[in-house]
Length: 371
Image (cartoon, rainbow, N blue to C red; front, side, top):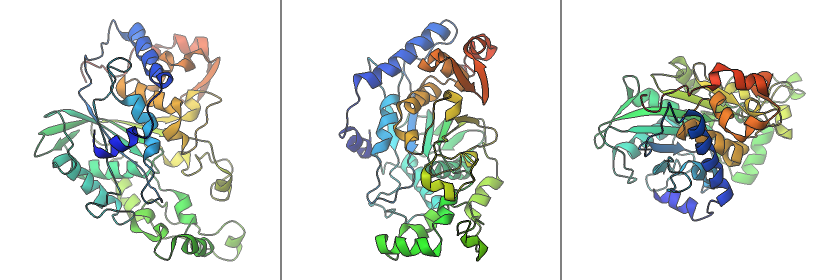
């Protein structure tokens, strides 16, 4: 484990209840699929996590503890978990990143340096496999990193570890089309408040922050737009990022989005536009990816932006998607949600008996022995 993770794990230890959840899911997986699809004796893949934007200095990375604990190896409770998990410190002070000083392309380059050199003491299996989680803005760093560094369909050429194969990429609440709240913070009135609180050179004007914006959005609310039609500048970074393939290669791409909005987002997003209190749900979706919404899990499931890091439901879902490599339908089959009377599966309301009879539930979508 790298030093960042060591600090996180020293804050809070995982409870037996949390670990038992992973044990139950694994047991159910083996009961249903074990005769045809066997899990490897050990998970040799390495997991890299790229956290999202933080206005705090130092940034609050402790929230990632919840799902890290659901994914990490434990000889008794989670024998198929990741033995190597590295958290990319996007605000490291040792090489000048600090808060807001690097833009997203520069952070993508720093991520490759962490993998390709011994700077952060990361270790990988030679010519092995890696999975990547990008949280919020971290997902944009991941996409830029893969866009710039991937060769062939899923390979990274490194000096120390040979050719690493990218297997799964999971983007959590990533504003793939930008975040309109960033645009709204450019309002002159809000800028006055931010300067009073954070000083003249605050995060809201940094290149990094503006690269998360949707661009070409009104800076004023509905009433003030009667007097001014001023819009934010075009976000050329997002435009270039989305002009290339959105889910390149043979990588398995997954996105997770929430719909539990906050009171203040009503002034930013349309009334019938679901959002997680920060990012509009529709802006997370990537064509070609497995796009998962909180409503796909159950009728009463709603996640806001923070829930997507700290909710036990999300942690369990990530365990099913990454460690067991199940698609959503098969995850629901083995999870506690299997007992729900009703659930939304891929946006369709169906009863439990119909769900149990669907062919899609009868085998994993990805062979765990031959990928």
